[in-house]
Image (cartoon, rainbow, N blue to C red; front, top):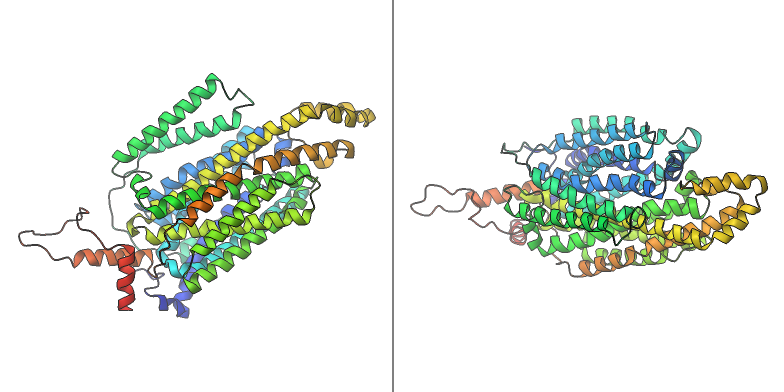
Length: 566
C-alpha cells in the first residue's frame, strides 16, 4: 500500500527499505533547498537591490515582511489541505508557485513590484514549510526521525551558507536580477524527483471544505497589524486616529476569526488543539524561534554591509559562523535524539543559547572584535538549530494522526508569524533609531561632508533622498559616521528579541517530557482504525459509526501496546 513507509523500526536496517526512504526524502530535501536558495541568494544583495530600485528602509523591511506575511497566512491553509487532499500534488504545486514568483521578482522595476512578487513567493514557501513536515511524518516515525532531521539540517546549511555566497558573487558579477533566476533549473529538477520518488498512500475520498471566511479574517488581522507596526512613527504618529482604526479593525477581525473557528466544521486552525499542553507551549516557543531565525538572517546582513562596509559577497562569508552553529547543532542533536530517544534537554539548551545569542548581538558596535561577533552568531545559530525542527517533532509525537497536518502547520504558522512580526517590529525600531541618530549627529555628518570638497553636494543629495545608502562606497570620513549609526540601530533592534527568547525558554522548560513513538503517522492511523474495528458491538446496535463517540487509545497507550507486542 505504502512502499516508502517502514512498518517497524527494524525495517530501517533493511538496505532496500532505507534506500526507498532516502529516495522519498530526496524530493522533500530538494524542494526545501529550492525554497531556501531562492530566499538566501537575495539576502546579501538586498541592500544593493533596494538602493538600485530607489527604496528606503521601510521598503527593505517590507521586501522581507511580505514574504513572511503570506508564508504565515498560507501555512495553516496548506496544512488543512494536507489533511483533506493529495499531499504530493499539493507539494508540487507549492514548488511551482514559489519558483514562478521568484523568477518574476527578477523583472521588478520598483520596490512595490518586488514586494508584490515576494508576497506570492511566500504562498509557495508556506506550502513547502507545512507539507514537508507532514509528509516526513507519513514515512518516518518520530523516534527514527532524528537522524533524518540531520539531512534536513545539512541541506538547510548548504542552502543558507551557499545561498548568500552565491548571491553575493552573482550580484557583483552579473547583477542582482540573476539572484531570482538561479533557482529555476533546480526547481524543475525538484519537481521531477518528487514525481518519480515520492509515493504516498491513496487517501479515502471525502468532502473537502475550506474555511474561506477564516482565511479572510486571518489575513485582515495579521496584515493590518504588520502594516501598522511598519508604518507607525514614520508615516503617522503612534498615538493617532490611523493607529486607532488599524488596531481596532485588526482586533475585531481577530475576535471574529476565533468565533468562526469555533463554529466551523473544518476550522483553519482548530482551537481545541490548544487544550493540548504540548501544542500550546510549542507554539509559544516557536514564536521566539521564528523571530530569532528571520530577524538574524535579515539584520545581520544589513549589519555586515551598513555597519562594517562589506560587499554582498563578503557579507555572505561573514555570516558563516551563525550557519555553522545551526548546521552542527541540527545534525548533532538529530542523531542524539534518534540514538537515545531523549529530546527535552536539547530543547532547553537550545533556548538558552537562543537567549544568550540574541542578547549579545544587541551589544555589538561597528568596531566590535569580529571574533566576538562570530561567537554570538554561532550561539544564536545553535539555538535555532536545536529548537526549530524539534518543536514540530514533539507536537507530531502527541497529536492524533488524522490531525497531523493542522497541528504541524499550526506550529509552523506561529513560527512564521513570530518571524514576520519580529522582522516588522525590528525594522520599524531600526528605521526610527537611525532617523534619531542622524538627527543627533548632524554636526558630524556636516563636518564629514565639508571635508569632501567638490564631491560634497552629490553625497548630500544622496543622503537627503531617503534611499538606503551604499555605505561601502562612501568616502572614509562619511562612512565611519554611518557605520556607527547603523551598528547602533541594528544592535538596538536585536534587543527586541531577548524577552521573547526568555519566554521561549520558560515554555520549553514546562513542556511535558513524553517519550517518542516508533510508529509513523500512517501506522498510527492504521492502528487507530484497527482499534475501532475491534470494539465489540453492543446488543441492539447494528454498527459503530465514526461519530467520535468511541474513545481511541492515546499515544502513550499505543506506544505501551506496541512495546508489549515488540
